[in-house]
Image (cartoon, rainbow, N blue to C red; front, side):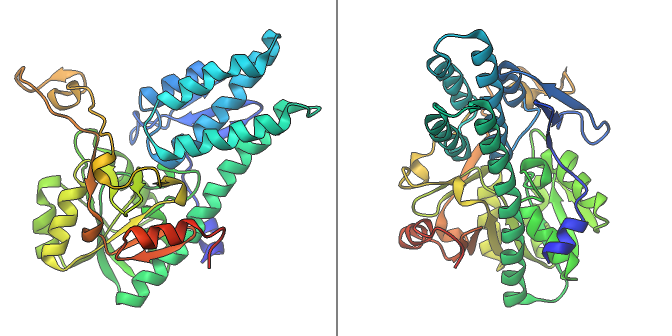
Length: 357
């Protein structure tokens, strides 16, 4: 499985070359593959804030590289550069509310503390960012295998899968979380067709996920978000597979807005529901989904298309995420293992593991 996935790699969202971070501008897809160069931390903050990149895993990687860029600038300015770097840590921490960001910055801060007496502290920080990037890629491979095994165990014949949002190579440092599993299942001959929700209001499903899967040669059908229940009923969907931006200590999952209603519909129709996300997404400081702060996005995302207003000027409620309760989830797949029917005890047991058992 690993070798076949590596051979099938076609899409990547980030590239670190010669001390510059290059980001594939997701706003321009699928019609233009435009790369944006980030040579400083301000450019990184702006790229995340303006949604050049989206997805918790990839944003965690991007902020790690942002620390490297910030450290280089602070060192060049002279003085107590580690103290000055604190402002950059704060700016990167505040740019996106994801556990992966906190996790990545903690790793970079720990490396910074250990590098203070290092002959080349900048090289040490760069090595840590590269390691974070590579560890996500390896986690994607592991999750793909675990998810494929789960699908095979429950129903191994060719089947229809539905996904929502974008949890593919564009949202990670590797092959994707949810899409990594779907890719692996496709390579094993277990995917007949993938139904992709458009994913309003930013249309990640239509612009990004459908684009990724079509490049892999899969049979893809795009559907309106409001058609998902009918698709489950009429098209023989056997799995809904999604990613996650945050998972709480009891197994509740915050993901792209619209995920919650999919889980409700999946339970009604007897469709299994899988969440695929690295363990860095799990926030043990949040007891349950009620503790998740849901970001509200710009009203223009709903009122405008391509900068042209298409809706009347009324009050808008535009949450970026919703929370799917753990009791609607059949399985959470991480690089540390699989939890079926997640709850607080199972999440705690998983997080105690240092490696996959």
